[in-house]
Length: 423
Image 1 (cartoon, rainbow, N blue to C red):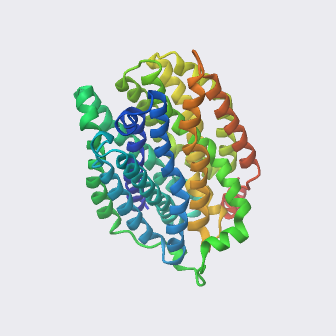
Image 2: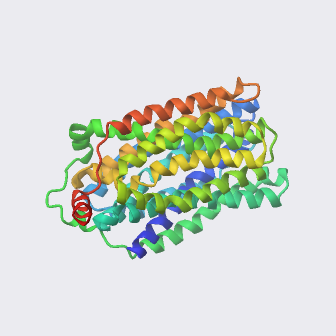
Image 3: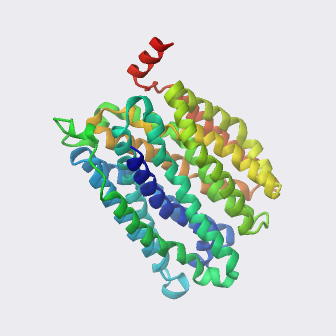
């Protein structure tokens, strides 16, 4: 289990590095380079629009790779998704700007972002299921949290590279070629991920299935459509929080508040470090107290914290911004740390790869794709504190709270029975 968990964590970290580095670039430089005829705000909105395309592609990737994950196994999905995401990310770093090739530049950017999202849509299901289906029932939450910690590691890698370049290059150098370097680094990371995953074995739970689903998506739509919609709605708040903190606030802080991108990146990264380090601990609590109670607690905390978060952000003071981000990400991790175990347990094994991944990535469309765009538009009409953004995020949190309330608890019955007898 330690070797498998480490490989899963490394793989998700690499693929989410690819996804996050685009979001950081969209917040900092892609608007002027690829949409120079737009106003600064319109250029940022257009860049966030291409960012959102990746989220739209993720459910499609879940369907495509989930089909093969349920039919052929979890392991092949990990290799194929990593190759697709890595190759498209490197290609983004090679796209000429609008000044060189005109309208073809943003079109190429859009296509490559779509391919990135397609690959990432397949990554999560394969990595989480391979770990969850190997793990013992009583510690499934703990072991399944390692691929869930991968996004935090990927974010720190992406923004660490961006921060180093931002601190050492001039603005002109960063805009000319520096922003491309993190995309090229993705190629090296992808090769390392392929090497790590070459030794993984197939999920024993998948090998036990005698009758594999012929068309997994059809079975999911026919028998689990309500579950898919509820999980997507429940997870939307997590995506909304994460991308409000890591993408929208970065653009807002640098463009509206005049805070340097180095300071903004440092504040966000510090909060993500705390969030990532707490992921296994929260997941361990889910093995003791259940998955659903923690998700409900995280949603409630998010609903209470969104207005304080935007107020602290509007100060422009590094320590206060960090505290605002930290509170939001603590609410986030209380929910998302347990999903590696919770979502697979909600679906039957024969359609688990498709069902869990589609629900997970549809939540990304609802929360992640829309939030930077909606928040940027709402903040444009605020003079001092972007209260509209706080209201939007609070509304998403309450919506997700209702969806989580309709989902069942899944902590294995045999574990509960053993604890009852022991007690």
